[in-house]
Length: 143
Length: 99
Image 1 (cartoon, helix red, strand yellow):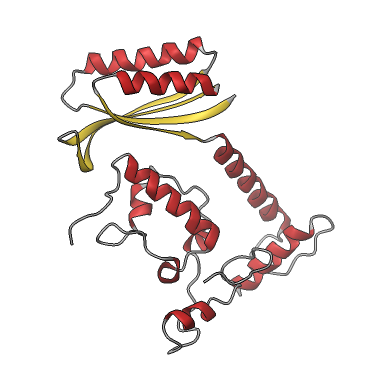
Image 2: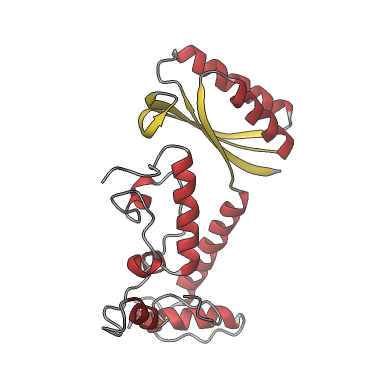
């Protein structure tokens, strides 16, 4: 299951209930496809960087969810059909999240390995030669 | 501009003077060794939603600042570029703003 992020802009003049209805619809689609919603964020009305369909501001909604690619197609279809939706973008973020996790772990490991107060002694750890190169490189840079 | 570089080391290690020299017409070598802001501050998440971060790398006209001016390292510049283009598509950043 891949994790996607959907950011879409709704007509700023539309009523709150219509927006909620739309979000509910999308929730339904995701649930039907066997997906899971991670978070729903309503950013509210924001100024647009350029006029979109003659509007200067729009109501932004962020939707983060995990699902299969077919569900995403369905969601995009619904957004395209909906009259109130001005723009939308779907980004696949599971790879990014994995990379961030990996980076965080690398950083924590490196922090734990260094002697307590920051004395940039070039480390020579037994394993990963690449890590050693990067660590040595960074401590060299800090000098 | 494509100089063969070996294993990607941190940007602060790589001599950036050479392409600056060519760029500025060989007037000054190693004028001011610029380091990649992302490598130094260890910012991992270059997100299209982070308009404040992105707009620091965009000119007044809305154009993406080149790597030789901003001093960003290649992989980060690529991610930055992609994020800026995504932000433009969703109207968080302009495509072109009047001077």
